[in-house]
Length: 256
Image 1 (cartoon, rainbow, N blue to C red):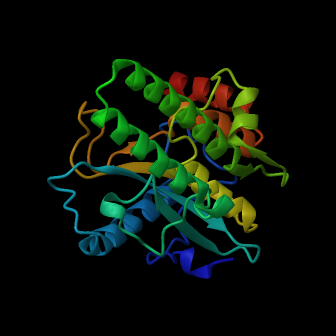
Image 2: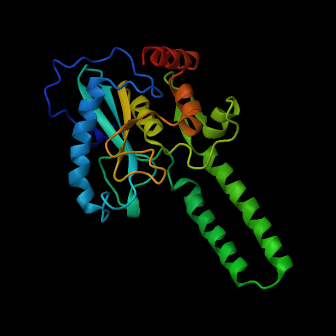
Image 3: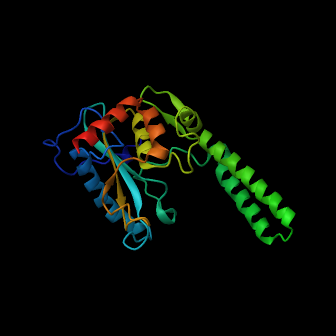
């Protein structure tokens, strides 16, 4: 286990109420221990982002997430990460990395993206309408095949230690095929690391960092539930919980 991913709480959490089970990722309820972890993680982002050559005050924000975990010795820590990738290809060794390893099959995803770019360049420089049609169809088929291969290599564990890839997970859901970028949100990455390293998930939350999104739905420092179209099938599989999530959502709405 990479101990450098674990954040120690700076605050005294001895008097903070700690949940006995993980909160519903799709609910608006945020446990106090998660809010404290998020607050400290945001302080870390303020310092760390100075290295990223990116100004969140004027450039588009990003979604981040934290997961409070309990080690086998009953001590509490939290882990954090960003949804997708950091801007400007920045790196942070303290963030939980992607579930997908880019070096898989001799970097097939990087090679595939280069091939797609080459086909796009051919389309721009070709004058023959028939040739353009053939190239566009070739690009489409290549893109679909590459996306399928990518999803096949996103492997997620559930609490019982069983593993499935994204295509297998979505096959049995009402969502159909996984949308683009599925598997890169903060919640699945955090839970994957916790399960893989025998850390008990205690409290989870995600928040927006930076200026509002284009549709103004996301606000700086505000908390948001996990997205349903990309994350719900994954999290339900990982946590082995489907009907309970629906029940909890109904209970939360009734209380609001």
